[in-house]
Structures are given as structure tokens and as C-alpha cells.
Length: 461
Image 1: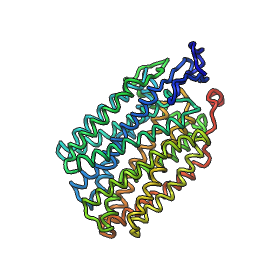
Image 2: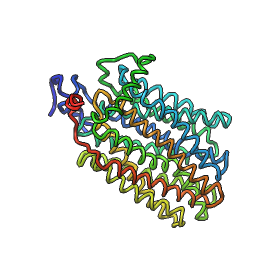
Image 3: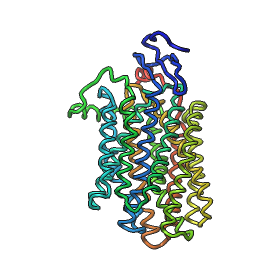
Image 4: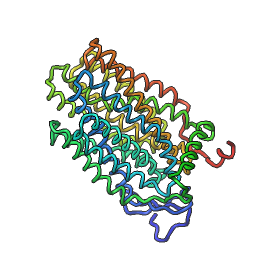
């Protein structure tokens, strides 16, 4: 339906991304909100931009830097500890940041500054002495994680209940194109000069973030409150504690957050160590170190390609069958991927099988974020999106602390002790992580994605 007159206050005008048609949709918000294609595209492009950092720095090239400084035997444990410290910082402050954005007039300034901090420190990685470089990475990664939290909380600004899965899936799919750019930058510039590579990653991240900063328009908080004061911070903490104490007002929320700890624990850890694992498997198969690094890059490219395709598919499926059923299917797929990936290191399967496993992992990876972002919104009252996404981010960060620690412990027992080769020890680690997926599936069994009547739930509470 083409709208030629301003809609009444309870109507949301959505300009579909694939056309210039304005569709009138009933909305819960009291004020009209126009979602323009430019805003949707800009939000999606930010997903591409920040993926350049997560793939290029966290998942790939910073692990090369650590490996070059401490050696192959100590790289897993060292990288696990460094990542755990970084995630520990954001874990502590994540709920507070989310509650702050609920109080603020808009969330965009938080996203802008977290991105700038991440970009600036990424550009310094490798140019500083080793210890200072580690701290630059720790803070840059914490800033990236904070920005991701603010970004996710903007999903309601560029979507509706009817198309939220599709837009989230498109964001995931296009976001993984950022992984292509990250890998491509590494292949073009090489890994012999890592500081220059990190600078190019930082510049690309910043450049592709700008459309989101300029073109995504928020409705804004109709009741802004003080943000940067001790009383505001104390109030934010009290609200977060009350959320856990009165969980029945938010059906399925606590169980979802606990279950999310376990599956993100496994998946994020595998993402962060996949490059090192690929290198070790390739070396175990007889490849020289430099060729093994190129093989690892190709394995990641295959996984990324299928993550892009998976994002489009899973986003469509979320809108068809709901985010919870979609997430169940994705978790089943991940169990199969983990079992197959572990066998690569444990029994030394042929390298060509690794590419098939990487394809399946890519598809499954696109499904996780396509499904659980809309599921979180289904469990979240509209006036507490920032705070609840802070909790959503907090459990993700907690898993990002415990996952690397679990990995480091397994690596210390199996690899550093000399008991197993790096590839075989990492294969055992993958099996351990797979068990976490099974635990998460059991916890999430009773969570539903039915729409909530928040006014009634508050009255009952």
C-alpha cells in the first residue's frame, strides 16, 4: 500500500529495502517511525564493517602475531588467556552499558565512540612493544564487543516483527562479506608485516562504519534520564539485579541467557581458534608452515562463503517457523560439525574433508546469529532493549572468558605437556566444546518464542 498522507500515530511506515513502496504497519511505538532503505542498508553495512575486525584481528591475524612471539607450543594457551582478559572487562560492564543506553536520548553516540576506540587501538597493534600491544588488543576487543551490543539493540529501529528475522539474516549474511575483506587484505598485503595489515583493517572498519553513523535514525528515548552519574549507575545495577530476581515477569529469558552461555562458549571459541587449528591440521598432513597458513586462509574463505549463504537462508526460515525452532535446527547442525572437525585432528582425515566441514560450519554459523538476535527481542520488553541486550552481551562475554580458559586448559594438558601433537590435542578440545552445545540444547528445551503481553505480565508480577 502506497502511503500518500502522514499515517496516524499508531502506524509505522516501513519502506521496504527491495522497493520504494511505503508499507503502513501497525506498530507498538506511540510515534510514527519511517524505516528507509538507506537506514536498513547502512545498519547492514556496519555488520560487514565490524566483521572485518572480528575475523581479521580476533580470529586470524592476531593469533599469527602471538604465534610469532611465543611459538606454536604456547600460542593456544597465551591467546586464550589474552582473549579471556579482554572479554572479562566487557563482561563486567556490559549490563551497565546497556542500562545506560536505555537512559540516554539515543544509542548512536555509544556506538560511534566504541568504534573509534576500537579502530584507534587496532591501528597500534604490533607497532608497540609486545606487552603494550597485548593491552591494545585487550581494550580494542572490549570496545568492539561493546559496539556490537549497541548495534544489536538498534535492530528494532530498522525492522518490524514481520521482517525481523529476514533483516537480521541479511545483516549476518552481508556481515560475513567482511570476513572476505579481512582474508583478502591478508592475502594482498601478506602476513610478513602484521602492523601494516592491522592498520588497513582499522581504516576499512572505520570507513564502512560511517554510513551507519550518518543514516540510521533512531526514534529516540521519549523519557531520557541522567546517564553519567553515580545514582544512574546504581539504579542501572539495581534494575539488572531485579530482572534476575523477578524472572517470571520475563518468561524464558533467564533460561535462554543461561543456555546461550553454553552454545556461544563453544562456537565463539572455535571461531577464535579455527585459524590455529587449521594450520596445525595442515602441518600434521605434511604441509610446510607457510603453505599451511595459506591453507588455513582458504579454509576460512570456504566457511565464510557458506556463512553468507546461510545468513540469507536462516533469516528467511526465522520468519517462516520462528527463531526458537530455527535455533534448535542450528544447534543440531553444530553438534555434527564439531564431531567431524575433531576427527580431522584426532585421526588425521584427508585435508579435502576439512573444506566440507568448513562449508557446514559456515552455514551453521550464519544460523546462530540470524536466530538468536530475533529470539532475544521476542523475550525483551520494548522499554528495556538496551539493558536486556546488555545481559545478552554479558552472557556472550562470559562464554568468551570461559571458552578460551577451557581451551587453554585442554591445550596445556594435551599439547604443552608433550602428550599429544598440536592437531590431536586441539581435536580433543573440539570434543570438549561439543559437549557444551549438548548442554545448551537441554537447557533451552522449554523456551518458547510466542509473543508476550508485557502489560499483563507486569500486572501479574
